[in-house]
Length: 284
Image 1 (cartoon, rainbow, N blue to C red):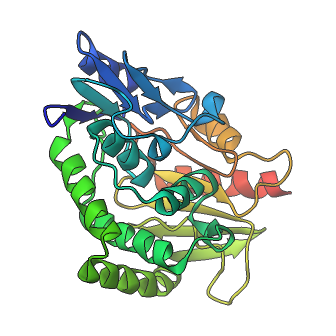
Image 2: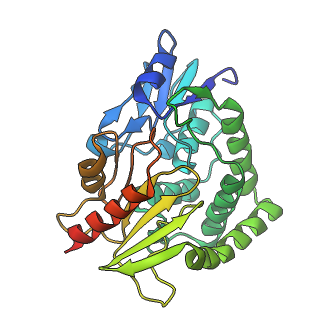
Protein backbone atom coordinates (compact mmCIF):
# COMPACT_ATOMS: atom_id res chain seq x y z
CA UNK A 1 0.00 0.00 0.00
CA UNK A 2 3.00 2.33 0.41
CA UNK A 3 3.28 2.65 -3.38
CA UNK A 4 0.10 4.71 -3.62
CA UNK A 5 0.58 8.22 -5.00
CA UNK A 6 -1.55 11.12 -3.76
CA UNK A 7 -2.24 14.10 -6.01
CA UNK A 8 -4.03 17.39 -5.39
CA UNK A 9 -5.58 19.88 -7.79
CA UNK A 10 -7.89 22.88 -7.55
CA UNK A 11 -9.30 22.03 -10.99
CA UNK A 12 -11.59 18.98 -11.44
CA UNK A 13 -10.65 18.44 -15.09
CA UNK A 14 -6.93 18.37 -14.35
CA UNK A 15 -7.41 16.06 -11.36
CA UNK A 16 -9.50 13.66 -13.45
CA UNK A 17 -6.81 13.68 -16.15
CA UNK A 18 -4.18 12.72 -13.56
CA UNK A 19 -6.19 9.62 -12.64
CA UNK A 20 -6.80 8.32 -16.18
CA UNK A 21 -5.67 4.74 -16.78
CA UNK A 22 -4.92 4.03 -13.13
CA UNK A 23 -6.89 2.22 -10.44
CA UNK A 24 -7.91 5.19 -8.36
CA UNK A 25 -9.76 6.55 -5.36
CA UNK A 26 -10.75 10.13 -4.61
CA UNK A 27 -11.17 11.82 -1.25
CA UNK A 28 -13.34 14.94 -1.10
CA UNK A 29 -12.44 15.67 -4.73
CA UNK A 30 -15.39 18.04 -4.71
CA UNK A 31 -15.66 21.41 -6.41
CA UNK A 32 -19.06 22.82 -5.59
CA UNK A 33 -21.58 20.54 -7.31
CA UNK A 34 -18.84 18.84 -9.37
CA UNK A 35 -17.11 15.69 -8.10
CA UNK A 36 -14.20 13.70 -9.55
CA UNK A 37 -14.85 9.99 -9.13
CA UNK A 38 -12.30 7.29 -8.46
CA UNK A 39 -12.46 4.03 -10.37
CA UNK A 40 -12.35 2.00 -7.12
CA UNK A 41 -13.79 4.37 -4.51
CA UNK A 42 -15.19 7.89 -4.26
CA UNK A 43 -15.29 9.48 -0.81
CA UNK A 44 -17.54 12.54 -1.17
CA UNK A 45 -20.18 14.08 1.08
CA UNK A 46 -20.65 17.75 0.17
CA UNK A 47 -23.25 19.50 -1.98
CA UNK A 48 -25.54 17.02 -3.77
CA UNK A 49 -23.74 14.20 -1.92
CA UNK A 50 -24.66 15.50 1.53
CA UNK A 51 -25.49 12.64 3.87
CA UNK A 52 -22.90 10.25 2.50
CA UNK A 53 -20.12 8.93 4.71
CA UNK A 54 -17.33 11.27 5.78
CA UNK A 55 -13.88 10.17 4.55
CA UNK A 56 -12.47 10.04 8.08
CA UNK A 57 -15.13 7.51 9.10
CA UNK A 58 -14.03 4.83 6.57
CA UNK A 59 -12.35 1.65 7.76
CA UNK A 60 -8.73 0.81 7.02
CA UNK A 61 -8.01 -0.69 3.58
CA UNK A 62 -11.44 0.41 2.35
CA UNK A 63 -10.31 0.98 -1.26
CA UNK A 64 -8.41 -2.25 -1.79
CA UNK A 65 -5.36 -2.03 -4.02
CA UNK A 66 -5.24 1.38 -5.69
CA UNK A 67 -2.42 3.16 -7.48
CA UNK A 68 -3.40 6.78 -7.09
CA UNK A 69 -5.64 8.95 -4.89
CA UNK A 70 -6.93 12.37 -5.92
CA UNK A 71 -7.95 15.14 -3.51
CA UNK A 72 -9.08 18.76 -3.84
CA UNK A 73 -7.78 20.00 -0.50
CA UNK A 74 -6.03 18.81 2.65
CA UNK A 75 -7.69 18.83 6.07
CA UNK A 76 -8.24 16.33 8.89
CA UNK A 77 -11.28 14.70 7.26
CA UNK A 78 -9.40 14.30 3.97
CA UNK A 79 -6.33 12.98 5.79
CA UNK A 80 -8.45 10.48 7.70
CA UNK A 81 -9.77 9.12 4.40
CA UNK A 82 -6.28 8.93 2.94
CA UNK A 83 -5.02 7.15 6.07
CA UNK A 84 -7.86 4.62 5.78
CA UNK A 85 -6.92 3.93 2.15
CA UNK A 86 -3.31 3.41 3.23
CA UNK A 87 -4.43 1.11 6.05
CA UNK A 88 -2.81 3.25 8.73
CA UNK A 89 -5.71 5.17 10.26
CA UNK A 90 -5.24 4.95 14.06
CA UNK A 91 -7.96 3.23 16.07
CA UNK A 92 -9.46 6.20 17.90
CA UNK A 93 -13.20 6.13 17.34
CA UNK A 94 -14.10 9.17 19.45
CA UNK A 95 -11.36 11.30 17.89
CA UNK A 96 -12.52 10.51 14.37
CA UNK A 97 -16.11 11.14 15.43
CA UNK A 98 -14.98 14.61 16.53
CA UNK A 99 -13.19 15.15 13.21
CA UNK A 100 -16.41 14.21 11.42
CA UNK A 101 -18.45 16.55 13.64
CA UNK A 102 -16.14 19.47 12.86
CA UNK A 103 -16.20 18.78 9.13
CA UNK A 104 -20.00 18.69 9.08
CA UNK A 105 -20.76 21.45 11.57
CA UNK A 106 -17.73 23.72 11.63
CA UNK A 107 -15.04 24.36 14.23
CA UNK A 108 -17.20 27.00 15.87
CA UNK A 109 -19.55 24.25 17.09
CA UNK A 110 -16.87 22.49 19.14
CA UNK A 111 -18.73 23.37 22.32
CA UNK A 112 -21.70 21.33 21.11
CA UNK A 113 -19.65 18.28 20.11
CA UNK A 114 -19.76 16.56 23.49
CA UNK A 115 -16.13 15.58 22.91
CA UNK A 116 -13.83 14.68 25.78
CA UNK A 117 -11.03 16.97 26.87
CA UNK A 118 -8.59 14.34 25.59
CA UNK A 119 -10.04 14.44 22.07
CA UNK A 120 -10.26 18.23 22.06
CA UNK A 121 -6.56 18.41 22.95
CA UNK A 122 -5.82 15.95 20.15
CA UNK A 123 -7.76 18.10 17.69
CA UNK A 124 -5.94 21.25 18.76
CA UNK A 125 -2.65 19.39 18.46
CA UNK A 126 -3.47 18.42 14.88
CA UNK A 127 -4.45 21.98 14.03
CA UNK A 128 -1.17 23.20 15.51
CA UNK A 129 0.73 20.72 13.34
CA UNK A 130 -1.24 21.51 10.18
CA UNK A 131 -0.64 25.23 10.60
CA UNK A 132 3.07 24.54 10.19
CA UNK A 133 2.69 22.00 7.37
CA UNK A 134 0.48 23.84 4.92
CA UNK A 135 -0.73 21.84 1.91
CA UNK A 136 -2.47 23.77 -0.86
CA UNK A 137 -3.46 22.93 -4.40
CA UNK A 138 -1.64 25.17 -6.91
CA UNK A 139 -3.79 28.11 -7.96
CA UNK A 140 -3.00 27.45 -11.62
CA UNK A 141 -5.07 24.26 -11.41
CA UNK A 142 -2.19 21.87 -12.05
CA UNK A 143 -2.17 18.47 -10.36
CA UNK A 144 0.81 17.91 -8.07
CA UNK A 145 1.92 15.00 -5.93
CA UNK A 146 1.57 15.38 -2.16
CA UNK A 147 2.36 11.79 -1.10
CA UNK A 148 5.06 12.94 1.32
CA UNK A 149 2.64 15.35 3.00
CA UNK A 150 -0.01 12.65 3.39
CA UNK A 151 2.52 10.29 4.95
CA UNK A 152 3.71 13.06 7.28
CA UNK A 153 0.10 13.74 8.24
CA UNK A 154 -0.51 10.09 9.03
CA UNK A 155 2.59 10.03 11.22
CA UNK A 156 1.48 13.19 13.02
CA UNK A 157 -1.98 11.80 13.80
CA UNK A 158 -0.44 8.52 14.98
CA UNK A 159 1.82 10.43 17.38
CA UNK A 160 -1.01 12.63 18.64
CA UNK A 161 -3.36 9.71 19.27
CA UNK A 162 -0.52 7.91 21.06
CA UNK A 163 -0.25 10.87 23.45
CA UNK A 164 2.87 12.68 22.24
CA UNK A 165 3.42 15.25 25.01
CA UNK A 166 5.17 17.86 22.88
CA UNK A 167 2.48 17.82 20.19
CA UNK A 168 -0.31 18.03 22.74
CA UNK A 169 1.43 20.94 24.46
CA UNK A 170 1.77 22.67 21.09
CA UNK A 171 -1.97 22.23 20.71
CA UNK A 172 -2.57 23.92 24.05
CA UNK A 173 -0.48 26.89 22.91
CA UNK A 174 -2.34 26.98 19.58
CA UNK A 175 -5.66 27.17 21.40
CA UNK A 176 -4.41 30.03 23.59
CA UNK A 177 -3.26 31.92 20.53
CA UNK A 178 -6.81 31.77 19.18
CA UNK A 179 -7.86 34.70 21.30
CA UNK A 180 -5.10 36.84 19.84
CA UNK A 181 -6.07 35.74 16.34
CA UNK A 182 -9.64 36.83 16.97
CA UNK A 183 -8.50 40.34 17.85
CA UNK A 184 -5.92 40.64 15.07
CA UNK A 185 -8.20 39.39 12.26
CA UNK A 186 -11.19 41.55 13.14
CA UNK A 187 -12.21 44.15 10.55
CA UNK A 188 -15.77 45.10 11.49
CA UNK A 189 -19.07 43.73 12.78
CA UNK A 190 -22.43 44.96 11.47
CA UNK A 191 -25.74 43.45 10.51
CA UNK A 192 -24.91 40.22 12.31
CA UNK A 193 -21.78 39.64 10.19
CA UNK A 194 -18.15 39.75 11.30
CA UNK A 195 -15.65 40.53 8.55
CA UNK A 196 -12.20 39.05 9.15
CA UNK A 197 -8.91 39.05 7.25
CA UNK A 198 -6.13 36.66 8.24
CA UNK A 199 -3.61 34.11 7.02
CA UNK A 200 -5.17 31.45 9.28
CA UNK A 201 -8.65 29.92 9.44
CA UNK A 202 -10.96 32.29 11.32
CA UNK A 203 -14.49 31.19 10.42
CA UNK A 204 -15.00 29.72 13.87
CA UNK A 205 -14.61 33.14 15.52
CA UNK A 206 -18.17 34.45 15.87
CA UNK A 207 -17.57 36.70 18.86
CA UNK A 208 -16.27 40.21 18.20
CA UNK A 209 -13.60 41.89 20.39
CA UNK A 210 -16.38 43.53 22.45
CA UNK A 211 -17.74 40.10 23.35
CA UNK A 212 -20.81 40.26 21.13
CA UNK A 213 -21.80 37.06 19.33
CA UNK A 214 -22.62 37.53 15.65
CA UNK A 215 -24.52 35.27 13.26
CA UNK A 216 -22.00 34.93 10.45
CA UNK A 217 -18.33 35.32 9.58
CA UNK A 218 -17.02 36.30 6.15
CA UNK A 219 -13.29 35.74 6.01
CA UNK A 220 -10.60 36.57 3.48
CA UNK A 221 -7.44 34.43 3.52
CA UNK A 222 -4.32 36.44 2.79
CA UNK A 223 -2.53 33.15 2.16
CA UNK A 224 -4.76 31.68 -0.53
CA UNK A 225 -7.04 34.53 -1.53
CA UNK A 226 -10.05 32.36 -0.65
CA UNK A 227 -13.23 33.82 0.77
CA UNK A 228 -15.21 31.71 3.22
CA UNK A 229 -18.74 32.44 4.44
CA UNK A 230 -20.03 30.66 7.52
CA UNK A 231 -23.05 30.81 9.80
CA UNK A 232 -22.97 29.98 13.50
CA UNK A 233 -26.41 28.46 12.93
CA UNK A 234 -27.57 28.67 9.33
CA UNK A 235 -30.89 30.56 9.34
CA UNK A 236 -33.83 28.75 7.82
CA UNK A 237 -33.80 29.30 4.09
CA UNK A 238 -30.30 30.81 4.14
CA UNK A 239 -27.38 28.81 2.76
CA UNK A 240 -23.71 29.75 2.67
CA UNK A 241 -23.36 27.45 -0.35
CA UNK A 242 -26.14 29.23 -2.21
CA UNK A 243 -24.58 32.63 -1.47
CA UNK A 244 -21.13 31.72 -2.80
CA UNK A 245 -22.57 30.02 -5.87
CA UNK A 246 -24.77 33.03 -6.61
CA UNK A 247 -21.63 35.16 -6.53
CA UNK A 248 -19.05 32.92 -8.23
CA UNK A 249 -20.78 29.98 -9.93
CA UNK A 250 -20.95 26.23 -9.45
CA UNK A 251 -17.26 25.71 -8.66
CA UNK A 252 -17.82 27.61 -5.43
CA UNK A 253 -19.41 25.43 -2.78
CA UNK A 254 -19.60 23.71 0.58
CA UNK A 255 -22.40 23.25 3.09
CA UNK A 256 -25.39 25.35 4.10
CA UNK A 257 -23.42 26.39 7.18
CA UNK A 258 -20.01 27.05 5.59
CA UNK A 259 -18.90 27.50 1.99
CA UNK A 260 -16.12 29.10 -0.01
CA UNK A 261 -15.02 30.64 -3.27
CA UNK A 262 -13.77 28.49 -6.20
CA UNK A 263 -10.65 26.55 -5.29
CA UNK A 264 -8.71 27.55 -8.43
CA UNK A 265 -9.22 31.30 -8.09
CA UNK A 266 -7.61 33.97 -5.94
CA UNK A 267 -10.28 36.46 -4.93
CA UNK A 268 -9.89 40.22 -4.53
CA UNK A 269 -10.71 42.49 -1.61
CA UNK A 270 -13.53 43.86 -3.77
CA UNK A 271 -14.92 40.30 -3.95
CA UNK A 272 -14.57 40.16 -0.18
CA UNK A 273 -16.59 43.33 0.26
CA UNK A 274 -19.30 42.01 -2.05
CA UNK A 275 -19.43 38.74 -0.07
CA UNK A 276 -19.82 40.63 3.22
CA UNK A 277 -22.71 42.65 1.83
CA UNK A 278 -24.37 39.59 0.29
CA UNK A 279 -24.23 37.79 3.63
CA UNK A 280 -25.73 40.75 5.46
CA UNK A 281 -28.48 40.92 2.85
CA UNK A 282 -29.21 37.21 3.35
CA UNK A 283 -29.59 37.74 7.09
CA UNK A 284 -31.97 40.64 6.50
